[in-house]
Image (cartoon, rainbow, N blue to C red; front, side, top):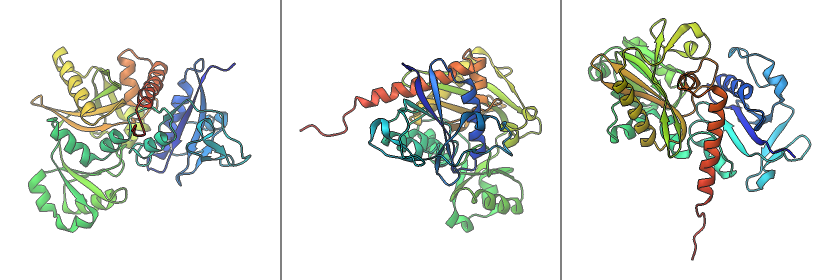
Length: 368
């Protein structure tokens, strides 16, 4: 009798972070504890279609984000919400997939990390890794996240929000007066440094807005923070732990997409961050947990800080499904904090199942 839990690894997706999601999935699949879990690979195409993936074929292609892709398109899947263990229908032969016990969705960015997939998985009544609908949506939207953090008294960088239909109301000079130079332009709902531009001239502002509006209908123009980049990994549901803080040291001065996912030599990680006393470490860990709770998060998140020269900490952003590639900071920080990669994946699955069991006990209909 097979007593292993069947865990669906969900990857790909409709966002600009599609390829990074594939590589994160490869690393999770490789490290999964096969004594406890049986993986079911489900790829989501850039059109949002679901396909069963054959493991050996998918894993054999390597992990170059410039060439990696979904490999099987002849095993499409459909969803049948409310059908219990028969909710995943194989459109090729018409049968249903065996039960799914939990889902490890590693869909980065919009349509995966923003609450939409979490809502679908709740409709399917499936346990899943990571924060729920509210926390995922709030943290994904940098504008909403900043407002919630500010309301909770947690410091973050000054910014100006620009909707696409309002962009003509903002000038380079007015933004410069409010935020100084340089400025950074960011899509409100995007990660992995996609669509981000550094701005020091009116021409760069125009170009940066054009680039950011390719990915979202609202963007943030944010002040430049002269500070060290410190990251803390957070893990837990009701009981929350924070990792040792790590410092990102980019070789060329900016921790961009290539440094995060492609070129391991483009940035260094020092953990614990240099010059931090035990009191400093405890303070940044406490602030990371406060931010995690302020945004109603559970499971996991990576909290990114700027540490200024005067010792002041500002939260840059919170990533609710951080990268799981071999050079990604979330698993590396937990590795340095005493939780090996495979154990970390196991704990995340267990946290998702525990939350589902807790929520299953809640009433969904009114008792008269």
